[in-house]
Length: 477
Image (cartoon, rainbow, N blue to C red; front, side):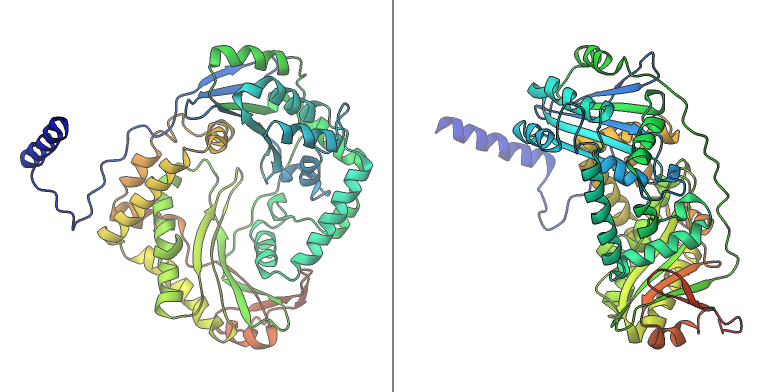
């Protein structure tokens, strides 16, 4: 009892010394930490493989992630090839069948994954650190010795083709495909897989894709977990040191076109009771130095429930259940998109309100309270994301791949929270255009086309994304 009384007395004295706590007011957040990203060790093996080791003692786990500097942009006319190749990495190797590989991963309680995006291909494995030797064995087996069985390839091609057919019934899948084709033109970023491209992919294509681009001098390896660099690096050198470097096929890409006038492109989907709307424009390459600060502007415009698009289209006008905006960034250039799904009868006013919000964030400074809410939200989300070892691994590799400054993520939270209203408006004017936009819609043409023509000329497409009705040049704006 004396101990309890003493503790209560100490607490009371502390409260007296520092003043009463007003529990009716939410405490102000402290300043963003100077460093919000862990330190890491870097080493380049003689074969050119760059290795990053991030020591983390939060859990007895380890994650290994390989990132290759090649993605769907390297597929050429075989669009979809990178995706099929990564899917097949764990579907059988020279010493394990697909079933054996899956059983061993499951027995260890591990996770294996591989994926290809536009710019890069990644392969990762994670599990308990006590299983590290076995994890490395499985990982290297999939990377170095994939068998690419004909039966597994046939199965995945069938699934991919079936998925493409299903996508024709999904506006959320159709709209981005047409958007990218229009924004990127002949650049590979604008290509998408079709039944013809998938059907034409052979096992030799898959094996060649792997041999041409899975090269140590075109890759980085990130290891994150409860490990020590001095102990893990010898294991990495032993497992990956024999890997021979090479030169991938050259890649030449055309320039991304610049739109001068706003145009509308409508995918006709008879029977639709709502319209999917996307207002798009060319964005920024990933290494643009303004992206951290610009993320505050994007969050204000379309970042979830608190974003202006949501507040306008849903809360104020009742046009939709949701609306948002995002800026996707790639090595060769990105794309800005503001989007929503709305009732057919409000397609025109909804499109105009999206355009109005883009103009408003350009023309008027964001208020202090609104800006502070978005800054704090982004900084907090970023700090929470550091709990994911896979995310940490990807970010270390991302800095090397895209040529970002070494302190990019260490200073991220501080840069986000320092954005002023004047700086936000400067960035909005610089990067968010209100002319030369590409508007993509998916809906019933006979109902929504006349509405959209009041904004800009409309070209109509079928669900194969082939034009079926050209725009009328005399359409009113």
